[in-house]
Image (cartoon, rainbow, N blue to C red; front, side, top):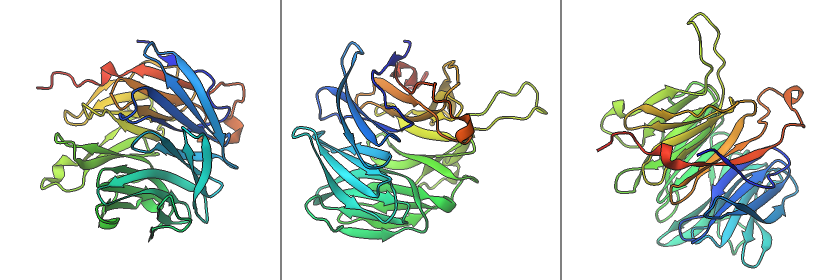
Length: 339
């Protein structure tokens, strides 16, 4: 399948893509951008994309997430606030405040509480009850938060100086361990993966040095953890210099637990972490970085965003290049010959 283009993409660099949860019968996609906006599209069964609504912050929006029931969307912005978008009432209200831009946002639902977790460049992780302007809890981080993920009772948070913290969210958020980074360069993205029983068991971590680490949180065998190179130029000979690009985002397939990586090289690749093999790298022009990606809850659609990620500075920004969000068939993410 060739990619389907989403209509009316954001006007500036696209920072985050997220599909609606499985609890919603239709498929919706949200996208946030450096143009201060969040947009929502409905993806129809025939692949047609229908723009539904736009909301704005006072500064770029860096991240967003859905509530578990799909009725609300939460946004994290450089204006140091997080907001809640009630999709039915079409209301957009502030729910959180930090002392610096907010980089990550996640909705936590546990048996005895629910809240929104925000991670900021002010070196804190805050947990918000939507009914109160003061946080339920604050965790001091060793450095600025760059990336985070939440799945069930597990949260992974990482940031400057390559710190990695693992939290257990049951009862109340508690740190369970600090993991030494298996990567030598700045972390860019993290995504939790599940075991065969659908329990969170580890995570994939991407760095600016074209490398991904597959890390289990608790494994008796350290050899289960490994790193692999990706998003690098092909070398004709070993003496030739190689271009190495940032891994901008990682998404796991909800059924197969294979993964997609996207990079500043303008390419995406599909991988089977269990077989430790690459499944596919489609031949894309690579003339525009891929900044973020997402896989829908039913495992059918892979979405990726083409827009400038500023890795070469302002002099390489070409305003004539159009931002794009493309939808691609997830069939290639099926593992090969797995019993």
